Length: 306
Ligand SMILES: [Zn+2]
Image 1: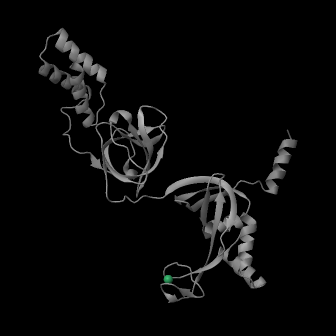
Image 2 (image 1 turned 45 degrees about the vertical axis):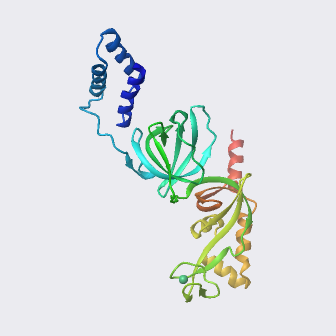
């Protein structure tokens, strides 16, 4: 009985965004009701007021549905919020107190979520979108997450919440290169690739030269299609649009550029960061994991000088 009263008081505070210790609420109620024979209602009021005072509050903020936010707006812990998001991934919970754990996404970002076993909520499914009502933001090991507890609600949405591609880092070997990689021409209007001077939307155009490469990277578990743009090709392959044009002019063969790029990438190991949509990976940063002959020499010198 006293336990239930304590839980009710704690819940009122929780809904307003304040966490108070259940044991202390219960102890205070017990003391008033059993030791001092204070009537229950008065005891409840008294304990409620005690915690208000502890929190420097005149009254609890009016309880209403928490604010609907986007994932990128979740920056600090202890906030009651609601969000519309898609379940991107489910992981194996490591603790029995957790019913589900994984990643949620919307068009502004990705965040970890935890559904506590005590919340007694139905399971969510990967790839489905939901309205998560009255969940609490939290910061755990320096990263934000949302906790879904028994004051929360999960409502499946008919609409599909669009998600932002995920930022990822992968390491592996480049095992294949798509033909058509190398020097290309783009439509100056829309950026589409121009084939024999014709843009599929704008007709005959004067194409703008560009470099692009699509390769397959194998990280030992999965393969990804990597899209590499000019800026990165210039750096990694030591190739510019001008150099590529010259190579073609000298050899009178378009595939010479693709062959050159293949010789720089195929069979080599890279650490790559970028954005991923399914298996399509848009490279933002790329670093060779091999040591250059100069670096080898430097290492030998260092070892010899020891
Ligand atoms: Zn066009």
